[in-house]
Length: 404
Ligand SMILES: *Cc1c(COP(=O)(O)O)cnc(C)c1O
Image (cartoon, rainbow, N blue to C red; front, top):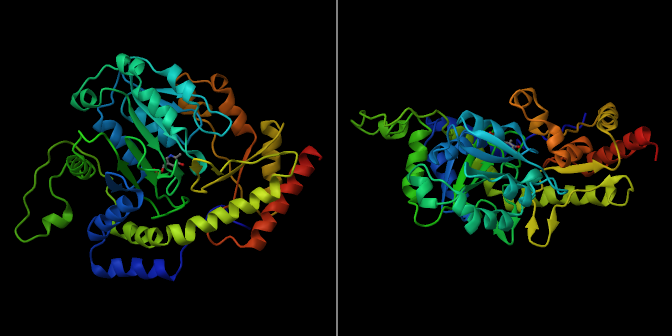
C-alpha cells in the first residue's frame, strides 16, 4: 500500500533525537530556543514563538488580541477544523466566507462579511498555495473598514483595525511576491504536525509581523508565559541555582514545545530548502505532467508569477462529478493499493457547526471544490515508480467511474 504522507525518519533524525534524549533536557529548553531563532532567520519575521501545535498558536493570538464573546472572526468555510474551533474556544462568532476557484478564500467575500463586530480576519493557504494577501491586507487597512472597527482593549486600540491572522499551517516555505510566508501579515501560524511538510511529530509556531509600534520582544515573552500556565519562569530557568521561586501572572495554558520535537525540527529545517522543497516540487510537477492533458482533470495551481506554493498538497479535482462519484473513485484508488485523501470537508458540513446553524448551501463554491477533490500522496521518500503507480491508479479509477 502506498501511504499518503509518512514523515521522513532517517538516521540523522534518529541521531539528533537520541542526542536530545541523552542531553537530559527533554522539555522546552536550548533546542526549542535555537529552533525559534533559526525559523525566524529563515522566514524573516519580526519574532517567532514555538508551541506544541499550530492550533495552540492561533488560539493564543486570538486571546492576545482579546477576542471574546460578542466579537466576530472571519474564517474560510473551506479549511481544517482548527481554524474555526479556536474562534469558538474564545466564545466569539465564526463568520464563514466562501472559497474561490483556487480553493483559497475570496477577498471580496471577506469584505462583504465584515461588520462593526469583526475583530480578526483569518485566511488559510490551502495546500500551501498563498492567498491573495495584498487584497486581504488592503481590505483590513482601508478607511472604510477602519471606520467600522470598534476597539475594546489596548491592543485593538493600538492596531485600530481587524487583525489579519494567517493560518499558514500548510505553507511553510511558500513565497508571495518573493517574500516568505510568515513575514507577510500581522501573524502567521505554521504547523509541524506529523503529516505536514516539516514535522516535529506535533508542533507549530507563530511568526509575528505587527506594526513596529508593537513591542515584539514583550509579545514573545507574553507568549512563552501564557503557553506555560502564566508562569514567570520556565523549567530551565528554575533549574538555575537557588532560582526556585516564580509567580503565576494569569491562568495560562499548557502548550509549550518540547526539545525532543525541536530536535526533529532542527534537522528538518536544515535541509528544508535544499532537499524537502525541491523533492516536493518535482513530485507536483510529475503529477501536473501526468494529469494536465486529461480532459477530466482540473489541476491545482502551485507556481505562478507572484505565488510559489510550499508544495504541501496536490489537490486534484475531477470535472463534472458529483460527490458520490468522487467517493467511488477514491474507493477504487484504495483498491489499487494507493492512499489518497480529501482536503477538506468544509466546516459547515460537520455536526458541531450544523448545530450552530451553519449550512453548506451558503458556501456553494467551497462545496463544489470539496465534492470533486482528491489529494494525492506527496512525501519525501515517494519514488518515481511509486508515483507512477499512483498516477495509473487514479487514471484507471476515474475511467472506471466516469467512463472516459
Ligand atoms: C494541520 C492544520 C492545522 C493544525 O495544525 P496543528 O499543528 O495540528 O494544530 C490548522 N489549519 C490547517 C489548515 C491545517 O491543515
